[in-house]
Amino acid sequence: PCNEVTYCSEACQKHHWTIHKMTCKFHAERKQKKQERKQKKQEKARKEVADSLTENQKNVARREAFFAENSGRKGSIEDCAWQLCEHPFVIGGGSIQYGR
Image 1 (cartoon, rainbow, N blue to C red):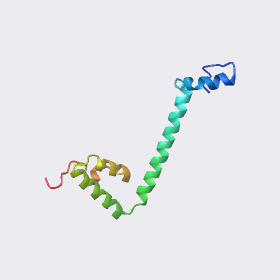
Image 2: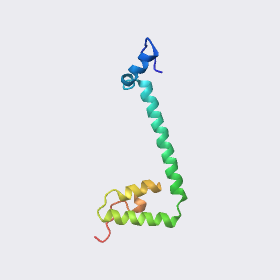
Image 3: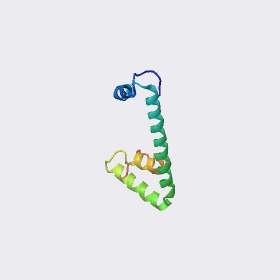
Image 4: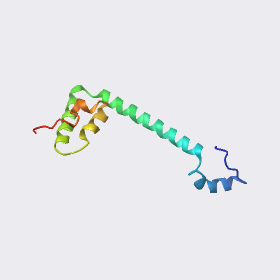
């Protein structure tokens, strides 16, 4: 509740909510905090999955990303690094070109 607007009845408040929620700072802050919590939760889950992979599984993913990047599929190394929670240079950084 932002207490910026007062209403004559609960019905008026509900009717005006679709308009008010676009400018309500309290609503915006609450929505942003909820989104931040969701991102943290997703980050934690992603890290748990990455930590559960064996080194051999990680190496397979790194090789696939490296060869995909060098075959013309842009962003493969960055995507893989993000999923494995490591720096892109571990995989090849995109600056190493295979066979060139």
